[in-house]
Length: 457
Image (cartoon, helix red, strand yellow):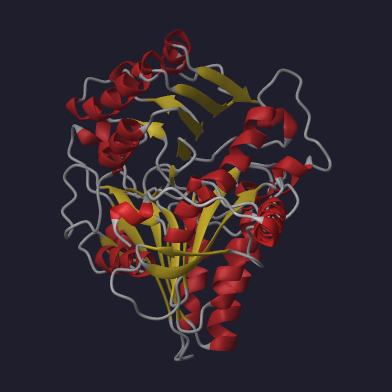
């Protein structure tokens, strides 16, 4: 039909034709009321979401090409996209040299991020920050500057509520974009610490679901807050391990969900972080590759210290009962827990004495110059992820008991079984292979290479 036909004046219906037309209109109206059309934001999820693996590579660390942008580039891009609101869940804030009492040129990236955040309220963008209740010695300058700019900041007193901290690290932008990963709101997390995360774009379904976790933190950030039992229905979700979001990521089919910890903060339908992690291990048919800063089969901070074999036992079960190949790459720095190394050696010993079990354990050593070694709490692999032949798991928690029982954390689980060019799971696998085979990876049995650099002196 041409333009003339499309805009032709319609003829007035008569008699039976009018009755038929009114009947059809009534039925159409009833169907629309019973089955409302999705909003434009929801349609974006149906059309597919875009996911990008992002990393922080410490200055001086020479690795192969990164598969995606840096954490700094991803954060800067998210801030540029912000039009309405930015919500950030965070452990602490040290984005400037002033916060760490340093004079490092590499702090410029963190200072740029803070400057862009401070500009947002002036652009009409609402900013909310949920942060772990700071300790008396924690720097507060960044948070106070945010409040002065017009941002809303709430400190969540998890030490009182659960005996843990708010260790989560994620961003939500305009209800459609997000970041989740290991990077703290710290300039060192951009240039001096090895980090890994995921940025997801144009994905309102996932952003809305992660937003429910943020809203729980926000609700707990008011003075005298208590943890509801049960959580109200508006915090609940139907996106979980049993019924993940079936969508496409970068054009490839995927099943996706967010998990959370500790159990007290789980609303109805939310998969617990430990349950999600163990589920990914249990689902592996061929291999499990893990890169995590801290791996301890006990509690680290609660007293008395308790044996906590939940993850360790499940990994060993996968190796022994299903013949899964396990490789674990742990972080190494002077602040590593002394107990970590015997647990790692014990796990590696499963492959001793010609058992035929495929287990390897290594440490990742970030080199440091004399100047870099003086930067406090830097030069370490801080990543917290796992990749198997079936799924990718990107978390915010170290692997020991306190993080899953008392501390607020979250994780992204992406199931993408089988081969597919450029899937998120395969990109994560490529990163693990790059780091595992790099010059910075040393066997746990080679104590001469790491003994003087890892753990307390």
